[in-house]
Image 1 (cartoon, rainbow, N blue to C red):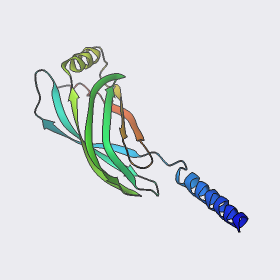
Image 2: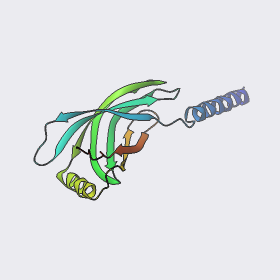
Image 3: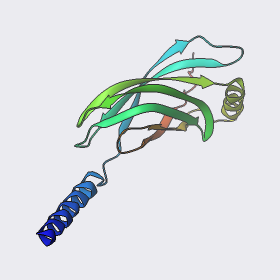
Image 4: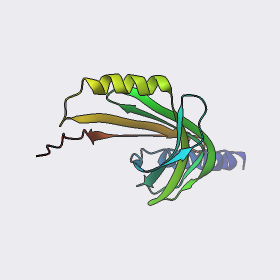
Length: 158
């Protein structure tokens, strides 16, 4: 009888281990799009915005989050960063809109203006948005999005 209980216990442990491994299987990265900027009150020489992000979850598992952070680099230089203690879910094969307050320091603005002064018209500025959705059962879900911003062309007037 004791041997039977040990076999049952080992079989159950093996089944739980396999189930746990399946739940920790790799997942597709989250898709993030910047969909809006809303001005917020600022102090001193800083600028503040609420960044609205569309987070798409292409996975068969709900993403629970408790806190998020974002960083935005333009032309390989830091521009804005922010954190929020918001919590919620991004549904499986679904999407959610998330707001994160971000700060742009006066130093960041000066650094970007200095870099832009030497930038050629008609070229594109590279940007990268990085962040993470914290917490949840499976830990932190990191994301990143990169692309280019079109630098405006000079308008020739007759």
